[in-house]
Length: 110
Image (cartoon, rainbow, N blue to C red; front, side):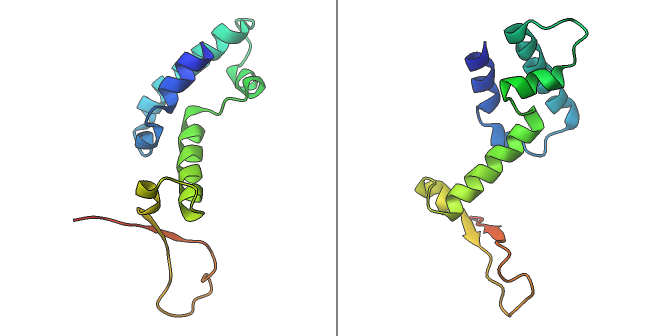
């Protein structure tokens, strides 16, 4: 169950960034149901501690984590070249207070 559900939630989950909350809510209910099947808790037990015991992030946090992980890998030359080419470090044209704040710029192709 764990492998089946998490692989489906992980598949292209960076595309889920910015989608409506009702879609994320449906995906979260699938994950919650899978956690209940895996652990077989009491009916009244809350699912949040169950997700914590299984070390599963909620769907929305999982999407954010994956995007941040890909960005980190791209900035540190750990990502594939096609991802590395899409992210550039922001270099301001003049000295600013946040010069060393690790800001990034995405590359757009026309």
